[in-house]
Image 1: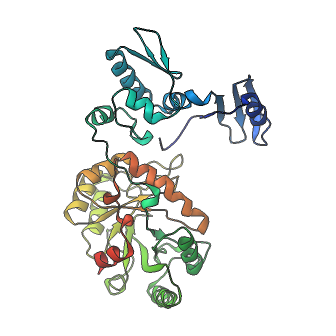
Image 2 (image 1 turned 90 degrees about the vertical axis):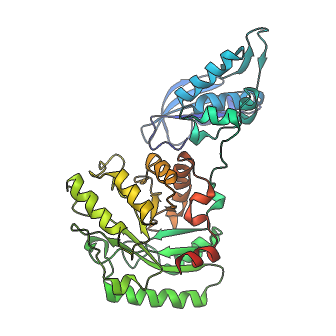
Image 3 (image 1 turned 90 degrees about the horizontal axis):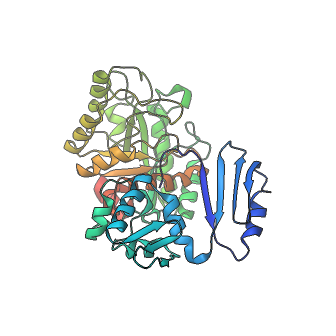
Length: 382
């Protein structure tokens, strides 16, 4: 369901010889301690310290088990209550008629939901937040998909703290089928990130323009991830920012400010006409750093008022905006950008996680900036 964290991992499968799959599972290199093993089930602790449970079922029951195991618990309770009103009992094995005791099995989750008179509910929405009622009405939206993404607007290169060159990032994006990327290396205030001062940024822009003249099939936007200083000012002057295609603003320092001060600081960036996108506004790092004190409702309201884009940062340790803030932003009509914050070509895969957050926020393709074609994006930023 693309929750931010997990406690353990449940795997399920179907095979002609389930015991062979179980036997292969418990001998995998990353399996440490085997907790239990049978002909159709096994539990083990893997090298990462997580418990992994594998359960094998026949093909006809796979959809029922997948739905049951996916959850959430409250979502499944809602479905069971609905089934009970229809004279049905739901389980991981399928749906049983209370009148005849006949069990219906389901190979596909979609058929499981349809049997209950419901539109299929994507896993990301299964949080008992009104999705069952929407499914009954047939109004579950077509959520944004990874295939809708046309580019990545938050990338770092070896000009700052990234590992690959601009051209390497561009070619990797082209291989993914993207139409465009934005190079948004850190500004000079990020000394530890080898940030770019005005002169280095000018040289980078010239390099990007030259690269666009040589490359076909991918367009590279010039940009920066400019620091929002403690006083709310930006780390680069208007004379530089105004010549870039895309300006991302973000907080990277002085994170212990009061809520009032921090909120005012980020509002200053939102109200700055040079800024296009505000990134990771809560500054959290999952499992490492708590969110800063900031009034997110005020931030969201200001972004809507000033027609600013907010980013869903897809780095797995950030996921900022989270799904709750992204949902509220969507309600307010804010356009959202999903950016990987990639520091190497290997990080492009984070986009899948960012799309998962957007889907949890009930986002359709039209809510996400980087589902636009290159032509439409060029028109937007002109």
